[in-house]
Image (cartoon, rainbow, N blue to C red; front, top):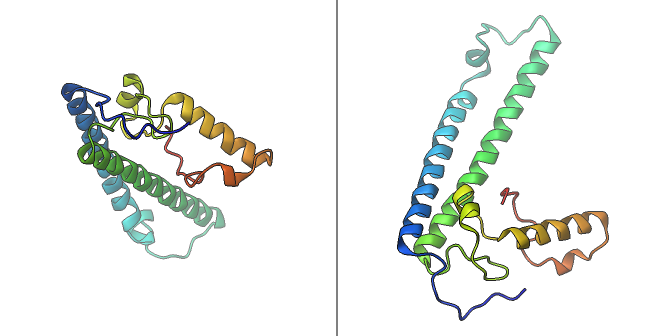
Amino acid sequence: MARREGDEKSAWGKRELEHFEQRLLEERRRALAEMGRMNDTIGGSDDAQTGELTTWRFHMADVGTETFEREQNNLMASREGQLLWHINEGLRRLYGSPERFGRCEECGERIAYERLDAIPYVTRCVKCKQDWEGAGARAARGTVDVRTLGPDHGEANDAA
């Protein structure tokens, strides 16, 4: 669907925009705290993390377990970093053009309050997100030409 460029009526009132700003800031604080916690976990040396005095292990399974845990921590830190990026983009949209915040980037309709309250950095309404995910699934199965998906078909999974 085409976006309504001329529609400058704000999607939300001042009170709702302030609420969404607070939700974005809360999510940002939480993500930063989680990243700090992960940094403390990831940042230490292997010896400090395991409490071992040597890198020689008696069991290969110990090495495998520690490697797996380190990879899981790195994956979680990467996901938190992506989440932080989406939150910051939401704040930029809110501060840059408050009249457009809360409008679907695809169809221009207002995103449901409950959706924005739960995930304040989303850019699509439920219907457009479902359509977008369906097009991605069809592309993965080879039933649609990926060139028709548009420039953001590789969008990070924002759970939105």
